[in-house]
Length: 458
Image 1: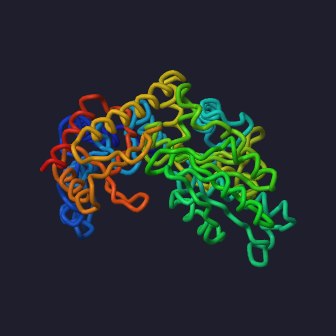
Image 2: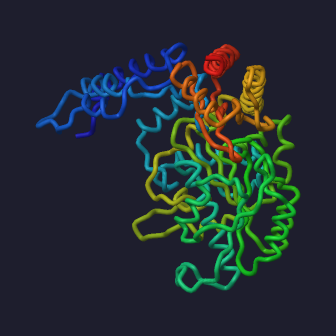
Image 3: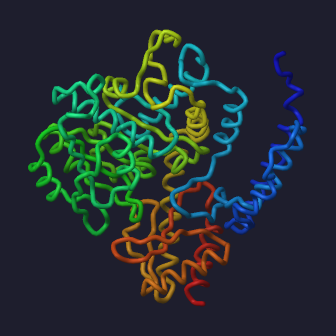
């Protein structure tokens, strides 16, 4: 029997009520969780019930048990890691994605969501200043976006070296040298491990974490054989950008594949006032970004872009007799590591459609403006020091010694007003601020800076 709509009404109504309560609480609730995982485990139940439960009651139990263990990540006062909020249209469309329950791997089977993702992909390429002919794959996050772009690069450089990766694997293959900046994100190394490429060759960076062109030139000269260069759009600590216009052409002259990790920073390309930060980025071969960071879609929604579709499809695609492939554009499964997946590109379409071109630019500009306000506010606190040039959404501050900086961070987090993660950058402990939420306003900024001031002057 096909499920009837009334089977879903009560649990969906309860879920909506709990979601609305949760979202409404963000304005004034403390940011940290009130309960740890062990406490939540006990409430959820350690033994599987012997029989069925009412679906609406299950939703109520889940919400009541989990809510104390939730971090207020949607709050405008959450600045930890690099985690955005969720735009209203993106959240609502993500609910539809779950209700529609489409396996978005094949264009023939799910033409509705495939079309939405294709439109979103075209809009992304336009906004981010990337080649209109590039392929776009919607993956789980930044790690898999890097993995996908680097897999296409591995495929291409080994093919160019005369090696048949598909038939012969990596055993006995020419060594692929991967050059990375000293301050690349750890997910780059992780993706290289997944790909069997081993540890990268590290190139020195400057005081803001940008790869040094002179050192990169030396590294490129010393490399023989297949080469991949990984650059960065948005340093995790400083927000700084590698000098794409200085180094990409040089890498291409040496036959290298160039990949840009732009998990949050690639979105500078969508802002006329910030586009200079990514000058020359469109000449790369692949790019990675996260829509759930700067664009503020729900988890999970990474984006992999590859300029040469044939390289991406050779690395990711598969054909089988039981799959029905449509004519025309390639199936989504040919662009990502998954055959089965949710239609995570649909919330991207909704976010972009709700914002429009000017709205995306305003979103990005607003995040940067708030980062600068926070940096200015922290800089006025006696004994504080902002360590980076605030060019995008990241701020790193110290308060004298490492010991005092850690103490300030701990007191600020215990206060609960805001969340700013501690870290270590260029040999110093730091308070790290990542401004990624569309809803952060001047009131949030003031309250958060005041929380840091209380912690620093305690």
